[in-house]
Length: 113
Length: 113
Image 1 (cartoon, rainbow over the protein chains, first blue to last red):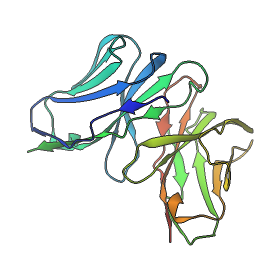
Image 2 (tube, rainbow over the protein chains, first blue to last red; image 1 turned 120 degrees about the vertical axis):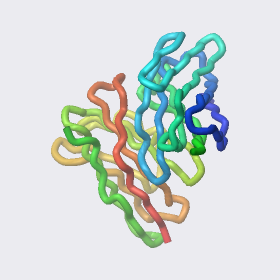
Image 3 (cartoon, one colour; image 1 turned 180 degrees about the vertical axis):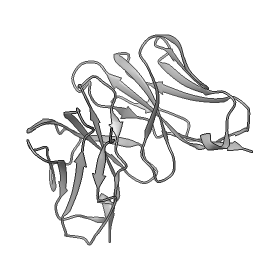
Image 4 (cartoon, rainbow over the protein chains, first blue to last red; image 1 turned 90 degrees about the vertical axis):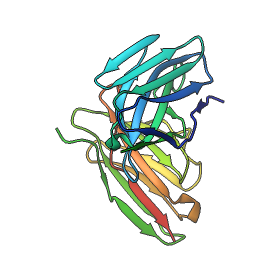
């Protein structure tokens, strides 16, 4: 059973702080990793993807991947109230069914003004 | 460049009726994926289609559910004889190539009374 685990939260951070969202996955054959943001009642919106170990930065967002620990995280710097949403971690596995995104249940982030 | 289009955005059906959900992929995208999000749950893969072909329907219930992506027109997810447990948000995603990023549509929220 290929699983993606996230803390459901809510994670509350003050405006301007760094929000750290974490995700673990069960299958070492995992190939690529995605972070989606989902506002309440809306569809998932891609924020970042990462394929290789290390950090990948895009504006205020940094994705970090550690395949040895089967761990991927998303850092949001200078958090804004508009960042308040549920953040979904998704994984694509290699081999059969590699086109499927396997999602965690999401972490709800609340940025307090 | 229009994004993924889904309609209707909201659909109310009584138990035993049929629900038809439509998805038009982004321009240039020939790969379509359907996901279901139950209340308080993560998104779950249902089916992957290319034009005129169902590639993988392993995530779709064997009974009452069917999907198609005809040569002309949108992809359709059909649910026959709906039950209350079918109430969920159904999201369609598309990609240009199978290994490329999936972009999600706004979803259809199905409510079964």
